Length: 177
Image 1 (spheres, rainbow, N blue to C red):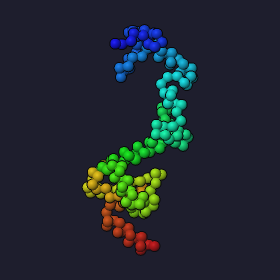
Image 2: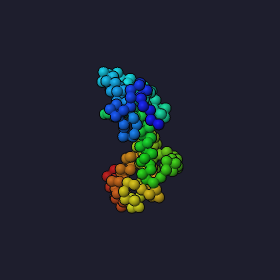
Image 3: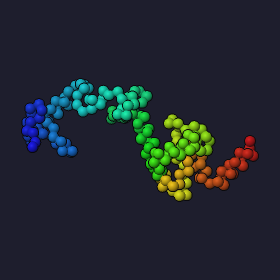
Image 4: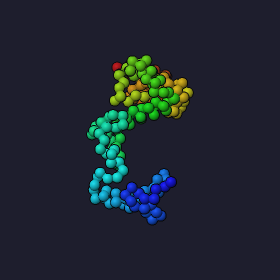
């Protein structure tokens, strides 16, 4: 059964009840009081009060100047968690799991498959796949060739994954060294 009054004693009636799109009832009198306090600059009133005082994200990363992004609407994100989620989404786009990605990276000793620089979280890691199998950036997972650094991935893309172009580039560099 529905309550007839809010916790502060105001009646839930047709004139004093706001129903949210999710179906939750709110007392308009209490809501108006909260909004008035918020407009007066009392920053400890209303929704998000508890979250604004937290010093760590749910994963335990600190909310500090380096690790916190605040969007124009004032919502904050943990940069570490956002980067991890972005990497996870990128990996999934190529039809492989995070475990398969990590296995491939381990097979390459944590290095770029072409230039052998050490790939870290700060280095942009790219999943290289055969574009003749899957011409878009979304791959089936079967055509993944390796993990590359950003520069090598751009280089292969510039040569359109064509061995003839790459050999011509080698001849050019050899003749002009």
